[in-house]
Length: 112
Length: 119
Image (cartoon, rainbow over all chains, first blue to last red; front, side):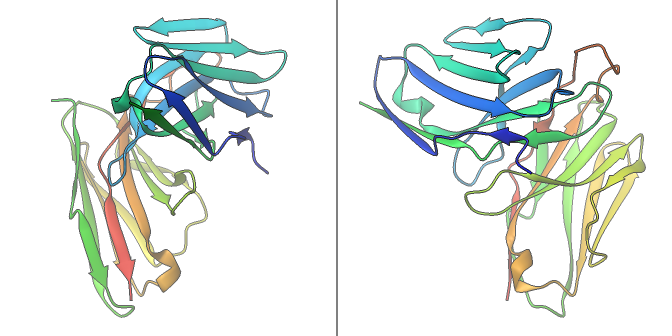
């Protein structure tokens, strides 16, 4: 039962362009979503989050959009930089619980 | 200090060995977590400690034994592991899960992981 899905295992984008990473979820109890970035041989690093009471959250080059009716969120990176090349995981959770459910990840490659 | 540290970075052990993984944080977080991550898969939750008490055990085999000696330290004791237990073991910490129904959350901060190989 895959409660969080990232249907694109990989994505290549030219430097300076927009990267859009997508995530779908099925659990309607999730009220908080997070994006993590992971480099090889390192632990995931928190990137940005969004509460279900919002539809957009921005932090510098990173913006997360949430469409609750479609149970879909996306991460936009503008402009993309080669250092953004990593695996990106989205995660859903329910406030008051400890469990994150992670998606399977999308490997982003930003080409110089 | 906003770091979660883990030792060792790499560990190779035989199926009859006993070893321990260690995790430490000094952010004053009261929740600590162990995750297991296999190649090309998402991290999977194993255990959660909240205020030094085991809060969640995700039906993990008893050959994995967690321990939380104090609020800053988390150990994972390993005994009689199988080759399929080879994975990246990640520790994380957070202030807690946020208030139920509040749509707020406290992010989990991850350590770099221990790459475990069981021969």
